[in-house]
Structure formats: structure tokens, C-alpha cells
Length: 246
Image (cartoon, rainbow, N blue to C red; front, side):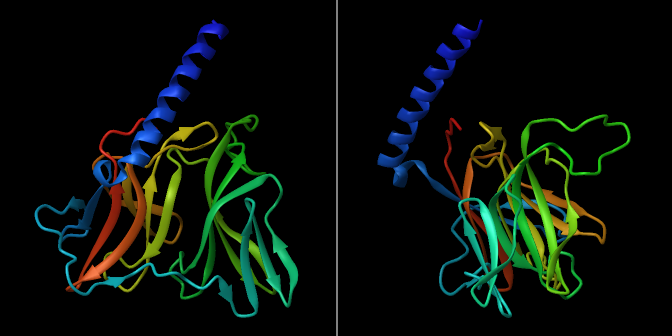
């Protein structure tokens, strides 16, 4: 059985390689751009139909944000996030965390800046776990963590257990126009201890305790997340490859 498994695995990898090469050679043909927005009730993600609405001047709501906060400089180096102050490391993520990406944002809607991170680590839970779970598992899964600066220390403010669907990409922006940032993500699937290509675009809001799903798009093969505003309407832009393998 193991022999058959490895034969099948090698075939899949070879096919994936051919698919990736073909996709690179014909990226301008295979990759489309999909545009989503929230309906008038702000309860459903709708795909834009017809001519692109972003012709002319538009505003990028997720600009290249400064990776500095006061005296602190944030640097992602080989999966480890390090925070420097006056050239010295004052805080860094544990060695058993792999940081996929991070962003400084008011994630918890209290007017202060939070450090948000997409984290890959072993085990579905941290030091604390539900009473019905006897022991942590050994699988490497995606988690979403929020830390806050307190007395020159970055302390955990909210940490998810293992996510059912990993966040391949995420950003914070005010997509509803209510004056507070929402969490916009590209959700993928688990593949070889990483994130496969994005399957859904989703929007979440903080309810004071956790993130609540506001809406989710149709399935697709998404990447390259952008949020823009045009004529007072906010749009989510993603690249969409129609026939993905992974």
C-alpha cells in the first residue's frame, strides 16, 4: 500500500509541476481578476458582473503600511517575527511558530493598534485546551493570533485554536464603511503543512470576543488580495485561476 501511495504522490507532483509551468507561461491567459463587494445590507458577498467598476481614480484601502510603531521596527525573518528597538531585539516569536504574515491594525476595535499574525504551529491548541480534549495533536495547522503592546511587552490578546480553513492571505480594511476595520481573508485548504491555493474570499468582524463571519464568496482559486474604493463603494479584488490543481 505504501508503494502505491508513493507512486500516486509522485504522479501528482509531476502533474502539478507541468500545471505550474504551463500556468507561468500562460499566466496572462489563465489568470482572471474577480471583483467582490458587500450587498446593501452588508450581509452577503456579491460578485461584480459586467464592466469593471474601477476605471478612473480609485483608492487602495490596504496600502503598504509602515512596519514601524513608535520606536519599534517589525521584521519577518525566515518565519520568525522580530521586533527591534534602538537596534536591539525586544521581542520575537517562539521558535516553534512559523509566521506566514503579519499586520498592524486595530483588529479588536478599541482604538489601539494590535499586532496580528497568521501562525503555523504544531497542535490544535496552546497550553490551555477544552476539558474534553485529553491531549494536543501533533499536526501543524494555521492559527490567527492577536498581540498587544503593554508596558513594553507584547502580550497575547486573542489566540485561535487550529483554523478549519487556513488563511492564505489576509488584510484589515473598512469594507463596510462603518468606520471600523473588518478582517478580509482568502481561505485555502491544508496541503503539505501549508496553505493550498485560496478557495474562498471571506469577510469577518470583531464582536468583542471573537471574529464572526459576515460573508463568504463563491468557490474559486484566489490569490493576490487587494481592497479598493471607487465612488464610495468598496471592492475586494483577487486574481482567479479557473482550473487550479492546488
